[in-house]
Length: 303
Image (cartoon, rainbow, N blue to C red):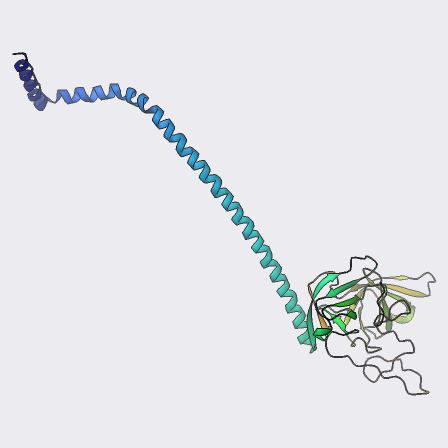
């Protein structure tokens, strides 16, 4: 009887709920009341899952940051190499353009090493006698004359730069043709014993005269940067800014063709004073590429 009563009550409730829907409203209100309890019961699980996700995200961000930093370093290194290669290519273009403009037969040689002695201005080239490099060969760059080869080995050669204290080169003032001698002074060039009547002024371009046949005539040597009287006030002393970039660059040009030599004067005839062409005569003093000391730079290397 009790079971029948429960069944009857259940049937009545089902009918009432299907017609009035009041049990559905009761269930919704009950769900709202128990929602905090469900949230509180699921809180530990949600906290654990969030901590796990945060740890995984942090580790991923650290790994990505490390990878991005490595990629940035590699990209910067590649960019630096590309910039260096671009500078090298620009210098090579300048060298080859200078040779082409002047119709020179040249040989490209990379600079292997420099002399760290502050009293000497010399560089070592990665080219030697096996590459047809010989003592006395003139060395130039896109700006002008750099120096000459003073010693060779089968694989390497040593170049005496214009600014070495043991080097001197006969030059002309391009504006008026006055002959002078440019001496090396460590980091610059110097014109000594310049006559007051030479008309030399700051800004004059100085070029090789061709006397002695070591260097061809007309190569830029430097520009007059300063003039002042010597101790006797009878002559001027000029400071030259070298035309060649002696302290930079990775390659130089070697003149392969031997420049013309000035023929000696006939017996009983005084040397001519001109030096502008093959018909000129060499002066009494052999000053072509001569060192400041008595020993010729082309035959002896001071160590």
